Length: 318
Image (cartoon, rainbow, N blue to C red; front, side):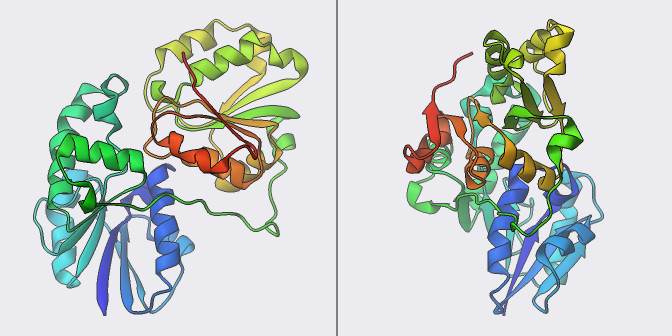
């Protein structure tokens, strides 16, 4: 029986696309009884609630909170202890190779669009990502766009890079959803979902919302996401708004069930990002039948399979 280790430390932190990717792949794969799955994270209880209990599923509680310590010492120790055959890592693999490695490089946006990323991040991660990509026994990414960028930046032939696209989980209609309109004081609203940072282009959406004076028509702008990187343009624009305008813009983080309810009841979903390695939120919005406007830049240009049903592709400019 094959023993497969999954680096699931992303489940210890705030919600992000990498978590959706791992959950999508392994929720399907764990049905293969000829593979033993070893999920490693600090928050083991969260992993159990997602992947469940079965004879071929095992959970390993990580001790290290520091990524360098985790990669340099803890994972090599775990691989040797449990006699792991394959280990799946996101972006960066351990410094010592102890088994066959699967590495997913979701994107190289920090190389394609350096102005959106801190210099320290770029300097640190370029050699680590390249080293991991070249050493991987199986190299994965999430879109054709990212595949081409990995080839271009790291000089790796495309036939070595396999695309395993992100997927979304659909909540059963029988699951009781929160009355989000009552909870957040909403009636008609426009929704966007993503971390608040310059690359996501919230400033353009906020500017358009104000210039069109949609708040005077009874609409609110709902931004679901955490402030990850400083967005001076967005912050300056927000501070310049009147009290009436500020009352029509809501910024908060939401549970996934609340997010589903927000998708289902939104008048419109807008995703104006400048650059994505994939772009999960517009796929989620469409999956819940929400009318959607989406940028067609980078990997999002691949979303043309929606045709003209209810997915408009637009080029957003600041």
